[in-house]
Image (cartoon, rainbow, N blue to C red; front, side):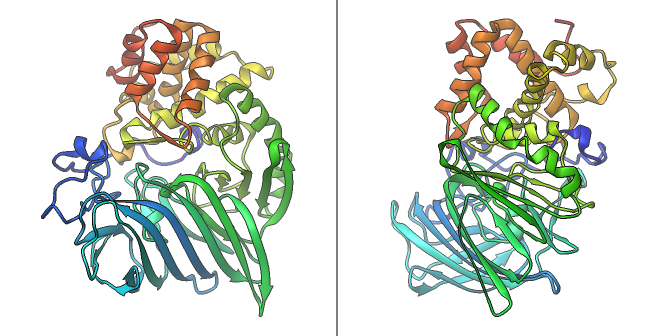
Length: 470
């Protein structure tokens, strides 16, 4: 997500969400024990979002068929999830907020279902065996409504004057499709989206087909590499489309709202060079597709690193493009296991901005660090430690972005430039398409540098207040 320098949400909306018992075990992949041994947990146990995600199964693939009418704002959906049971299951949950569910099938059989808040509780006709692969088909419809987060921002399916801006971090995926809505569960995706002729529906991955008949256009997209649900998009609008092929056969697809084109086009033209520069630092680009969605959504207030194709609420500046592109490695390919570690996404993307400036005639990273460190001790930069923000309402605050980047700069100063760049590349390469934690990053940094860096990272990630001058 974009740097807080470009977000406009008030700092004060920071109520803490309640945690659930045994959250640590759940974050490591075990289902929190709820009910009996055959009942999947209603959440992944994340301390910040206890009901996000679910237990008892692992989704391997989502096949989403959507029809959307921007005029009425009505969505018709069919979601087919291919999953594997990780325990014997007589009942399990999916995350779905709002929308009316009309039927659920597990395999070929109708399944009973109930709604409990954001949980769609499904009881199959027969219990599922541990290790069994199964399909869940959910038919639903209604008017999607976005989620309002603790910081006052909205995410999910956000209506616009010509379609919808679809950005799911951290909770919004469940506003438009039933999901295992936590980064722990990554899957491949197929999207079939039908909209009125003249509108464009842009999702993740490669565009496989576009066809128009009887006044409606259907777009088929395929995201092959595993993706967390919050990174999925199905943004709809009136867009100017640019397509091409980048080195290595990467399919480029940019969709720009004509109202933003004049400001966006000069920045978008730099995307291929930004991708090449970042690949030179972090290793090969992780996906088969790349591009951007530049919408005209003045009430949104942020951009999001939707996998393979970030979505921007307006024409981005170059720093924002560099930031969201860096997330394709840090946050998308290498994903979180718990939202507390959000600095692994935002600190890394912010520091990539520093590196780009440094290597393209701008300020050195040290000068950027010094300017930030000059902020007084009561500045919001030091309001809380980026390695443990404390609640979902603080995920996108200044400390996570800027002090997270400062932590990386101090690591760089400790190990030297060559070792530092080797650490970044090894992190992106060894955890590609997977997950990572702060503890794992610390161990990798010590291995690659041969130096004890844990104390430095602990100071900048976990200490309260302004650290002593380095």
